[in-house]
Image (cartoon, rainbow, N blue to C red; front, side, top):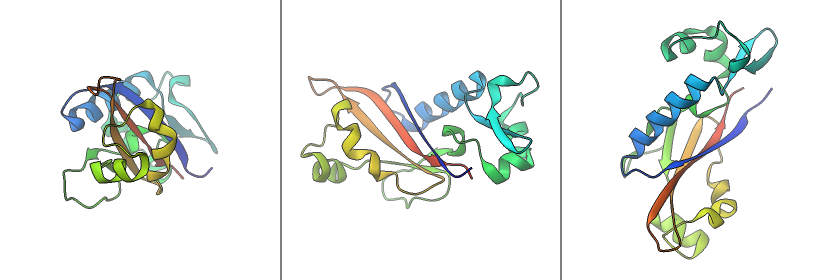
Length: 147
């Protein structure tokens, strides 16, 4: 099947890890991820018997091999200075934002410009998006995962 791109926008909160956790909980509860059953993965929401906990989901051998093609495949936002690793989300730095867009305060209008910052599978990015007055308004999470 290959890796799938995914993206989500959530309301801003200062704790990016807490925002990621809440988003993962929501996606899991709604079944908005691929769940490998048979030869072709299907949307988990199509199954009444889908896993009821994330532990159960990730104990599934097919999920371990193929992932969920969703935000569930990443689990932690990196702190400043940490190196990106499998399953992590790296915030867009002020220097990256400035280099790509000419400003450190990203908005929804910049999404097309920054999307290529997520270039590897099993790795995500996030960016704080600002309103027209420059106040943090949303967090954009995006990346690629799944096999």
